[in-house]
Amino acid sequence: MYETIAKADGDVTVNGHAPKIDFETFHNVINNELTSTSKTRHNINPATTEPNAEVPVSTQEDVDNAVSAARKAFKPWSQVPVEERKKKLVAFADGILEYKEEFAKLLTLEQGKPLSQSSTEVDLGTTWLKAFSQMELTEELLEENDERKIIQRYIPLGVCCGIVPWNYPILLACGKIAPALSTGNTIIIKPSPYTPYCDLKLVEIGRKFFPPGVLQVLSGGEDLGPMLTEHPDIDKISFTGSTVTGKRVMVSCAKTLKRLTLELGGNDAAIICEDVDIEKAIPKVALLSFLCASQICMMIKRLYVHEKIYDKFLSALVEHTKQFKSGNGLEDGVFIGPVQNNMQYEKVKSLFEDIPKEGWKPALGGKLPENGKGYFITPTLIDNPPEDSRIVTEEPFGPILPVLKWSDEADVIAKANDTKMGLGGSVWSADVERATRMAKQLEAGSVWVNSHFNVAPGVPFGGHKWSGIGTEWGTNGLKAYCNSQSLWVFKA
Image (cartoon, rainbow, N blue to C red; front, side, top):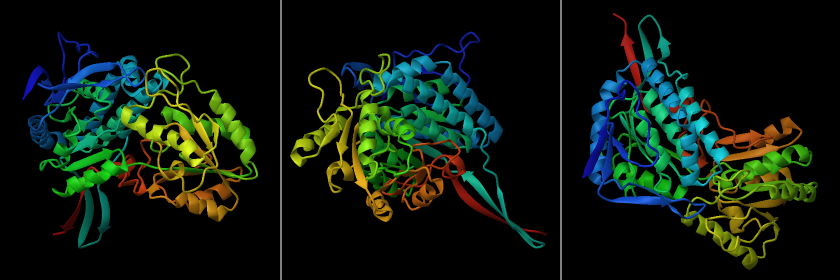
């Protein structure tokens, strides 16, 4: 049973003005109503382990109410002209930006990333919303002659659910909301239990711009995901998270044959060739290895450096990484915040415990901070560990990076591909033609030359192998929220 706190019908105003959003209290949004639940829970600030505010714990009744509202809203929303839907997405983005500072601070308090990176994420989320307003998904004429014409159409699926992870809750929520709503679907957002706060506020702001039932959000515990993935009246799940959980989501969705997009984990390799400009490459490689405390699916997770430059490159990487300031994300100059939650902290901690057990050689770091609050991990570089060690074969999702030697091109490509994961990979060289040839041999959904982790709203994003099924973003991402229909028209 939920309690209605406030109700809205699309364009929310008080005396002709939009009411100021309160960033201190948090509610579900069901059918444009702010609702609470009898039971609540809270997340903690990972930098201090102090509690954040209480949030709802949704029940099956809340899920049923949200799905019912989404189903009721679907047909009229799908019949709104596409240009009008896109205008609402742009207005929604502008509405979020009115609270950019509040979102950035809230994101740092719940996720832990430095304030500057939180501010960037707010910008990225709104960029994604606006970018999808510029994309077109038009009917395609497949064939036409004197007798007939055949047209491929794209029809919205219906009620969708976006399950959002804890590392980029704003960007990845917006990256699901934009294609779903622009193609005429309705969507329910389920934030991670670890980072519910920003997503609850995003959708609260959305009440001003979208009719009831079009955009909703439910906060809850570990049991909320299965309630949504098994619900018979949800048509699509878009899930971003770990491969282990993704497999469970897939099993659950199979019961009702839901459409499904999975964006899962990675163990990205970056290959550094012997002709690389070390001075130029080091700042980028370091940034792309430790950004967001390395809690990004497409960060560099395995760094292969050619033996001819290995010692010089590693030494330069150590010196540059030493400059990264760790600490509370609200402090000035911090680049590496805490690991987001205790579960992930314990996983990364276990890798540090393996350092002396396995005889790994730290080139930098190697020990956890003593005492103090928060889930902080010292940035660590492991010097040429065995290829079969956990630090190489598993995705750490924390600031510890194996650096490995290579000499033979075919061998290093084989090693880069020797994983169940296939999200991203990169090759770095002064010889762009060579690097491109090597990059094309990497078994991954995104590959880069002389860079890593570049993404854009117009570019499809997805993984190979155990890193996912389907793609998000770009025209492919729009199609993922639609059924294909072949229309055969015979001329009279």
